[in-house]
Length: 297
Image 1 (cartoon, one colour):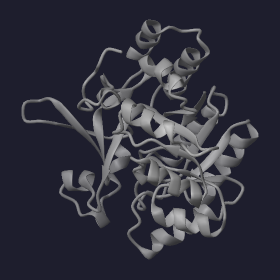
Image 2 (tube, one colour):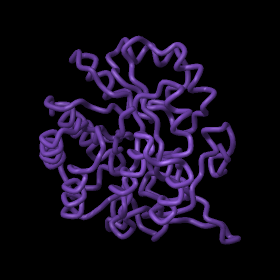
Image 3 (cartoon, helix red, strand yellow):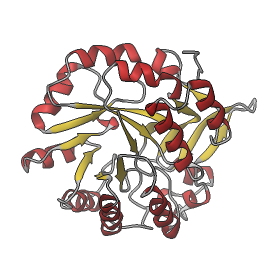
């Protein structure tokens, strides 16, 4: 089973991003997803910058993959989409069906991202016909639903599961981070830069509820399937995805790698992670329960 580092979902200063991936080059991760997949207004890095990082990671022995934006809203977004796909040295993660259409027309394999919402075998088979070499399970899917899809998975198709990080739950044309500061989306003052792990939102009773990340809404808790690694392996999952956070990402990768290699048991892994996580863990979706629940394996 391989480890993947998912795309950076937050907005960080340019140098911080370069420093982060320089450290990841020596981390025990097999696949690294790159690119701006959330908001078109985030311009600290351009497509060519992401391609430069991808080249360095490929030289370090990683499979570098460039992701496309999830919500396409303008002609400018379409141009950026085409620039990402034109970086032919790297595989593309398609996060909307427009990207799938272009990649299929060019007869190029791709990764079907988690936001294509593959919930049945017919959709998975269609994506395979269009050229998908790997699909990423939607974060809301349960283990039982995955088991059914794995039973009918097209030949040669790899399966990847989001195994760690704040859950990306929804996208909107409206920027909720800007709205929180009573700003218009087009004049957001790039407030996301102030929240390297998103803006935590609480209920009136003070309970942590959601995390705002620009136009993306995330869970407040951290989805963590470290205790389900054996079950994931038993279901024939090929890749586990870890989502970047502003601190301790390399150490978290190391814990997952040790768990995959069998050098760390579940209690020890959880103990190490407790000091590294930005929020309390959850795994409810995996068990078909509310996502914020933490269920004993």
